[in-house]
Length: 210
Ligand code: ADP
Image 1 (tube, rainbow, N blue to C red):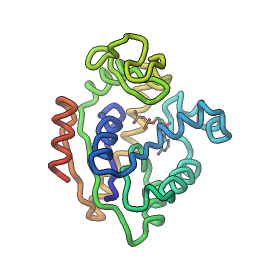
Image 2 (image 1 turned 120 degrees about the vertical axis):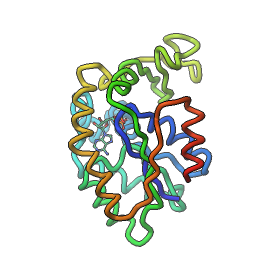
Image 3 (image 1 turned 60 degrees about the horizontal axis):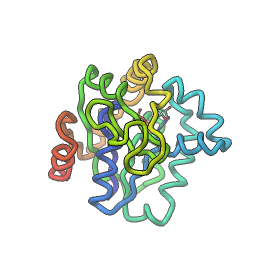
Image 4 (image 1 turned 90 degrees about the horizontal axis):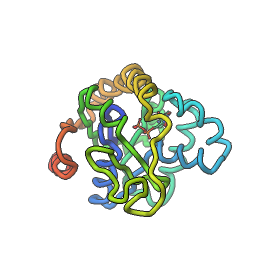
């Protein structure tokens, strides 16, 4: 199954996409995670992406497309995948369409959350270097500043600071939201799920839709 997860930053795409991918036995491919890894490894791509990501802007299409196309060409993605955070622009969606050709996509999961809740979620979000995600009010690490899953330290992403969140939401509205119409026009199955509720209940709602 080849699925996309769409929705604003902070909607819980990453959390849900990981769980659904594990349930379906297909890889979870998150361009944000891949880019953060490139930044922490100090690769050429990471050096180009770093300051763009800190501002909450989008990394140039050609760089992200090349990275994604390479990733979905690996063996583990041959029978399906979940894309989380890609495509984020029409140009990326068109490149994906060309790459997948006849195979196409099986559907998109759209997680719906209102903007006020998004700001609350993102400003309280904390992560560790291994990508475990917490929230200071909703889901704190049991070990406080230390990740209770792997022992790394827990910190706030640079782009989760309040001043950057507003820009990310603007970028989402301008560049990514038009993808909903793009895929509707193409007749892709769109599974819209309410992103407010317990993590388990949202996963159940997505699995039921699929
Ligand atoms: P969120 O969904 O919370 O905004 P991500 O981890 O998906 O976070 O993305 C973080 C940042 O990585 C984005 O703000 C952007 O700078 C960059 N990024 C991730 N995916 C893409 C993409 N498909 N195209 C361009 N930039 C991207």
